[in-house]
Image (cartoon, rainbow, N blue to C red; front, side):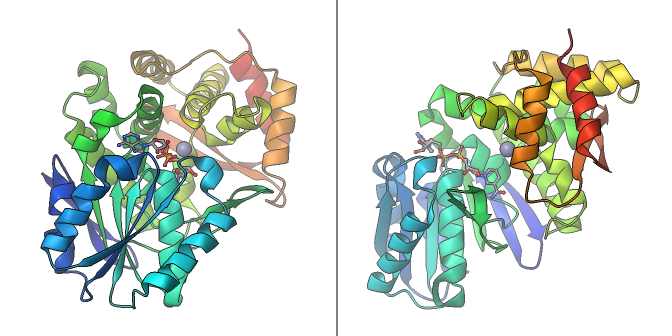
Length: 352
Ligand SMILES: NC(=O)c1ccc[n+]([C@@H]2O[C@H](COP(=O)([O-])OP(=O)(O)OC[C@H]3O[C@@H](n4cnc5c(N)ncnc54)[C@H](O)[C@@H]3O)[C@@H](O)[C@H]2O)c1
Ligand SMILES: [Zn+2]
């Protein structure tokens, strides 16, 4: 088991290891004074792991209620959020009690937001069950739901009290959902960690997953500690995402998020190599890793159409955009620039 300490506006521990969900109650009981627990989960995850968490909480003296919503990004909206808040009002946890977010990023983002809002804030314990949620969304305190106008438009920064990454949960993940997590792991290596990239190159996929998750959580910890409220260096975590979001939008969401980010990272790396600002080895390592983790590398979209989609996606950020540009394996820089430069990079990154 690995413990990682996060020192954001609230200090908390991220624990990573096999079988952690069976210890939820004992691990939470020292942190939470009250004895009412509300499990928030989706319709896929609750039948798999809800009972384990409930039993563990009950054994530690908690009385347990639950809110289960239909799985999928389509549920991450204000309707489900309000239904969850109404369920909390029925179950009546008070400020000394806690919400347990059991699921992927959708559950974690929405339950985290509900916990921050209900009674002006009750504790949230994150129990991430997807690889993406373990390496990315459960750590760092961003919570949100979507509006029809766009993703994650309603949210707050609110750090959890504890994060338990039970690696046993990964065994039941559908392959496509598992691959999503690898895109973010490769991203973490490319922006901050040559040693992680080297480990991913030489190990077989899934080998020593606890160490891989821990490396990603440490990278996220360092970035969040430096810029919790996302006004500067935290934007480094968006490597591949500006173009990735444009690919998602233009493809009408036929690409999964992780696939779109994979393509976005490669387009930026190719463009920067063509400009001579990125080491060629960086592109070859990225391509090797994307192939190894079964992520796409070839994008058949047109540079002009992608630029237009990126402009639509970013229409709320007045003025320019901040691009994350790879320099070498483990190092990227941020550049505030205009859409004309993104257009140039897209043309370079997509040309064969
Ligand atoms: N807060 C942040 O910093 C942050 C960062 C990245 C992404 N996100 C958000 O995370 C979301 C994506 O997260 P996700 O990919 O985990 O999506 P998700 O929560 O929808 O989970 C993906 C699918 O896997 C299923 N599932 C989850 N765990 C399972 C398990 N152990 N076994 C079997 N099935 C399981 C879910 O029911 C769902 O169908 C997006 O909404 C995104 O905006 C947030
Ligand atoms: Zn992402």
